[in-house]
Amino acid sequence: MSGSMSELPRNIPVSTDVPGVRWLRSSYSTGANNCVETARPPAGPGAGLLAVRDSKNPAGPALLFSPGSWTAFTARLGRG
Image (cartoon, rainbow, N blue to C red; front, side, top):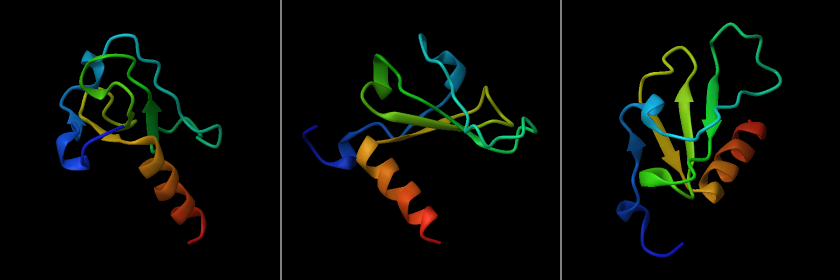
């Protein structure tokens, strides 16, 4: 992926508007809607990025991360 992160889209205003996306949750989720959901938009403004949204607000916005940024973020969380 070329260009700087500032050139990439940073969010999707209405996550339910992204066609062809299957939102996933962690297998550790209890179903209480207090977690995040992730998806990989196949086309449009988020293509090639990872979309992350709040499960309590599925029609709300989704943040977009490069796969490498998301991996680094979750690895850091795991280290405390």
